[in-house]
Amino acid sequence: MLSYFVHFMRAFLPLALVAGMLLPALRRSRTGEAGRRLMGAPAAGLAAGVLTYLVALKLEALTASRATLFGLGLTVALAASAVFLARRRREPGSLACWTALCSQAALAAAAMFSFLAAAGEEALSATAVLNSELILNLGGILIGFLGCAILVPVCAELAERSPSRRLSLGLFLMGLLIAVPWGADLLLALMRLERIELTSLRLSVVAKVGKYAHLAPYGELAILAALAILIWKGRSLPEHAELAALEPAPRRKTKSLILRETRWLKSALYLCVAIAAVLGFYDLYASRPPRISTPVRLTPDAAGLIRIPMAQVADGKLHRFSHLTDDGHLVRFFLINTRSAGSPGQPRIGVVFDACMLCGDMGYLQNKNEIVCIACNVRIFVPSIGKEGGCNPIPLRHEVTGSEIVISARELDKGARYFSEVVSIKVKDPVSGKELINLKAPFREEFKGRIYFFENEKTLEQFRAAPERFAGADPARNFRVQGYRQA
Image (cartoon, rainbow, N blue to C red; front, side):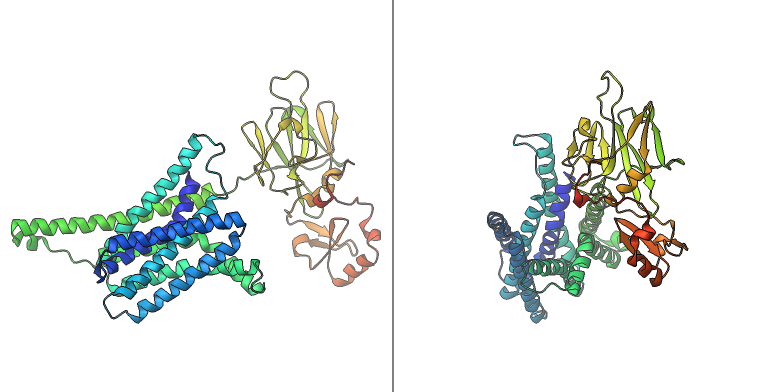
């Protein structure tokens, strides 16, 4: 429900705000029928957005369609801005009215396409029948629609009470917040379609805009809140003595106007705070990927073995551990009793790396009685843990001796390259023996999947000339690309 509400608001919030800000100008235009025109233009844009998305989906051309739609939208927006600037000293006439309506249509088409593209990555419901998930998701869309519908008259009231220069500045800033992400999406689409050359500068611009694009709705709401606050601070209220001197009817009318204005301003601020709070909750908490529990760091004994009592991990819960290799790789692994609770016989403990051969090292988490691969959200059949294949965690060789599970540090070291996390530790240059900090060493070299660190280029070249001489008998490490290796 929440994700659909957020997708809807991010797509349609600019449309609602701009429509409200333009409504007073359309009312003052000589063309008349402002309300009907303001509804007709976005309706045509929404229909165009739906049609464009369906055709793009059928032809498998979402990127090309997005580029075309956003390119046309930017062109229309620039044309509308040019007309607006050219006629800024005149009353809004038919040309300004029609350019504003075209801008609304372009915004509506892009908003509908963006929403459908975002919603298409999620399923409204996992089944084809009516269920609570479907109702909640549709409810999120409905609440988003009602929020945008309420914002239009609120923005119109604020625009009516704002000076023209202040309103023009607000529209300009709103246009920037809309145009910059559109331009970045258009640039990315053109590079994907190989219509323009892929360069580091262009890719950097797209990456930076994409990183902060989710903040655009907060900026749009801030513009609306700023208009409300400036009106609040700039209004001149009559003194109590002035009100008392008025006749009863004019006094009631003045109080009514003040109360009406206050309610509109408070409504605008409350709406901004409420929408920003929901978006913030989604961005900071609800949309964050699940995180694994902190693993318990284990150290091997003098024989290079890690011993874990079976009774400690026989409760059916996921027990996560870690081991630090000599070059700083943090190797995670977990143990879990794969035998169902209440089943007769000894516990059957699955011992595996906390990494997937297909998805990488994001790890696994336990959700009630299910083990879930975080990267792809696949539910793992618990009795199959310890066997290779699919999204199952990578098996870890071990031995069961009496009431203990024994894992060799050597076997853990072989799986170090399954994991990307490296922590800062002290290491030695294999040639000179000088002590270094692995993350600060000036030179490094990989050999058999193991990282070696060097104090200078001279020792590095000596190692490269005869790596077997300095690496010793350390076994080669495994890579995910090699697949699972039995022994």
